[in-house]
Length: 64
Image 1 (tube, rainbow, N blue to C red):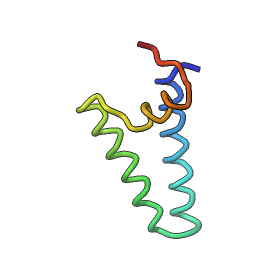
Image 2: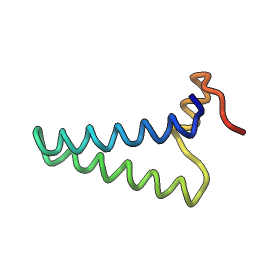
Image 3: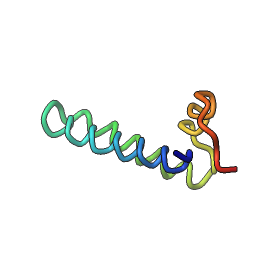
């Protein structure tokens, strides 16, 4: 799987899991949802993504 698809899948999974945890466990989990959204917004502006760096170190090939 290409890196940009994997990053989208991970971000989507984080959002859905944190929404479920916020609903059934504790509303504090909604802060994690906000963090993921803020990180997506930041990466669109700065063109730097921490998850991309983590996946590169794990050996996932980039599309570049």
